[in-house]
Image 1 (cartoon, helix red, strand yellow):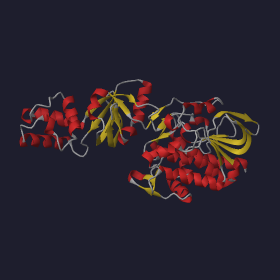
Image 2 (tube, rainbow, N blue to C red):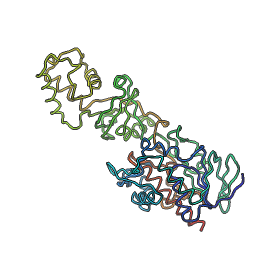
Image 3 (cartoon, rainbow, N blue to C red):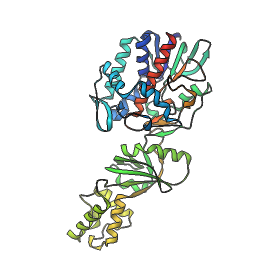
Image 4 (cartoon, one colour):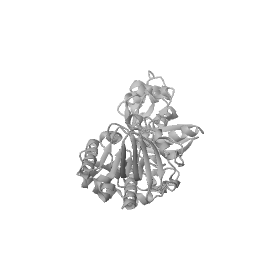
Length: 415
């Protein structure tokens, strides 16, 4: 295969597909070519938000992003805002709605509809998509870039690398994508998982696998709080999952990478009650039925298996009666329910992560155009850069915003 295309986009994920539409609307779809190494585009997009696709967040700003220089996102976010995201999806037939905490979703709550609308617009614009095509190298020449693929060569006026990150290998993530840019002299910061589950001592959680609770979480590094969140927690056979845990999983993964200090996770299992209120509740239970065993003591206050696990962690025998508890015991139990501490072993790993932290060093790219400062005619967007956002739609907003910046600049270059 030997082809020519003014604009070649490497990667048919969220950022690549959006960039193709933005560019095609400016220069014509026949001048845009998308290359995807998998057999279909948008595979990871289909899994976003457990299949509901949290498109963006109305509160998207620099404070929700991470990397060596989070301020890098500022110009792109200003040029293509969450409101622009809603207008864009409106323009391709996808209605959106703002839900809890500013999260923007498709009105139909279907990630498949998001991908369908993107594909329909690409078809309407006449953009060519080649799947099952692996890009092996980018070779600069005087007036453009030669794209070497496993199917042949393509000459392009400019190339956008929107190939995603290393997270979620089952959905197409790969650390290999960074090589396209590092081979050209670009630097890559260390990669580690973000928006990921947290591993703890298995013995502490194996009895409560599958239990979901609303809790407040804190990560303590050498006893000092370094991250916190609140919301749904899912206990697993390896640790903790659920939105609240995954929100702070990045910190656990970074700690695992650095291997410095001792990290623990503290759970407040009754965040709507003060510690004093918990004490009073337990005292009333003891007074009401002193013969009740500790196995049944907290029924109606905390999920039964979870309560039993917490009591065992305090050193109590479940066959003990409530009447055997002293005031000091009640305080100890109440404190543990509000400050249950588990030792962290790390994260669930890159394959389990939703997003990659780390990536191509942003200092080598223009934050207004996403253009490489090292190699003319090459642009990047999305997760491949050393930018990752919090859980809640911030990563997809970065995908759209950076795609718009890059597509606009590429269109200006070839017109």
